[in-house]
Image (cartoon, rainbow, N blue to C red; front, side, top):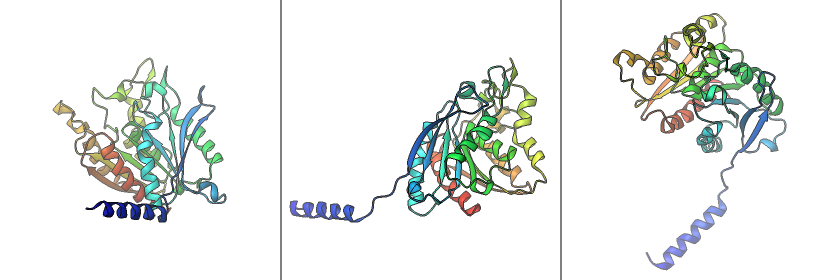
Length: 301
């Protein structure tokens, strides 16, 4: 290629870049919101779609996104470019997404109200404190058909728990690599270590865990007549328990068991994906994209 050819190509590329509109990007706000259930405010990032400020009468679907154990709200930075790209391409309607930080129980509270002496009422704080505050501040579609909850790992447990325990709030859930061990967690699981399912000085109580987990919640939900849409995903290289007696608690196996049980439950529409990868964003990124598109179609957003 000659120097003239290279210059011509560079000029053409510059002209095309000028002529084509740049992909509109959403914005992120970081908030600290006081709630009566906690002594400290909840920190939260909120994604607002491009054009939010330009349409003051428009209301938007809302997604509550829960991070995994040990992570922070910033972990959801992986999905911001995905949201921008899908919205710009028309694959997803513009939406608002809230990503709360979950520092309670040493970042291992599993999003439930803990009865441990050092636990916190996390579920009440997020659903009865943070959610109403966000919906008062932003123009969300404040009904279950306009809301979805999603999460990965510990956050996948939380998303499933919220969708089943509070069916009046959420019409759909995106559950990625969920730590939803049945009937009880394996010996080395972090669910036993941080007090989310504890009481008093005990870090873990079998009965409390069973009461919070999905089989018990499904029984309570029966007959309520509300349709739940549930997208489940896991990786084919998720951690394998070295003890053969605990193989059924491998996360990919638990995802299959969850799908099998909920696909038979009345009023639940389910999808399952097993992707190439392990317990990380190479699985959660594609699962997030496909799962959110499916939820948007299901809820007619």
